[in-house]
Length: 327
Image: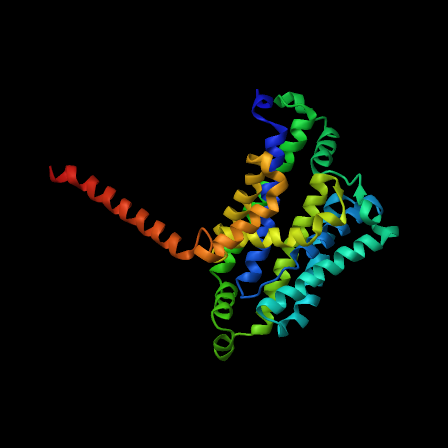
């Protein structure tokens, strides 16, 4: 019964949407403090390769690989973020894009460790590891009406869904905290924020490190969902793709990056016959958005209007409920 509802292809597409949402949030959090970084593809590569090498070559558990890959990317984020404080706008974007390309070239040339352009295959897959662990306790997917491969894809999706919900809730809470308000103040006017006593250096590095941490985490998950990675997965195109998730959906609010990642991951799947022209479509979308709606599809003003509309409707319902009393 459950097997009839689970289509491995659709579940896998949904899993990639969730990974891209994490990547979209990684660029959102750096933009939230007014920094334009294009190095997230490089941090994603560091997370992916660190986790892959630790699990394939050192035979460490998958969880250890993911945690190490995530924190290694975060540490490099701090190391790159500190010298990048002197740069702003386009200069910071070019510098971080250069960082991503340096990482990619190192991965290609360090063949003895990374297997060069061929990439690393046979990476432990998240779903199969979950199934293997449950089978040691006597679990059989057939007892819930699923074949092994259906259970593998479904378990990956469920794990990623829980992770994304946790990450979104964390950043929603952070936006309402002192850290979120400091990010917003720095984005509005860095000098004014400094005169108000905000430690601009600390919060900018924190924002940069959080973005790197998230990108590294997404990279590690990507490696263990796909079971194969190569340097081409983290090229210039990936850096631009991550940026477009936030630019298209709306970089002012969290839900904008989520919508951008969801829509732009689903679009090539819905229009399979246009898959080869994906980056051309992205370029056209970027030009149109910059020309007609630079704040993205969803912005803070739109959310305020939706909130006001809901409040008005609730007020009308409340008023309507009181009418019968008058009758």
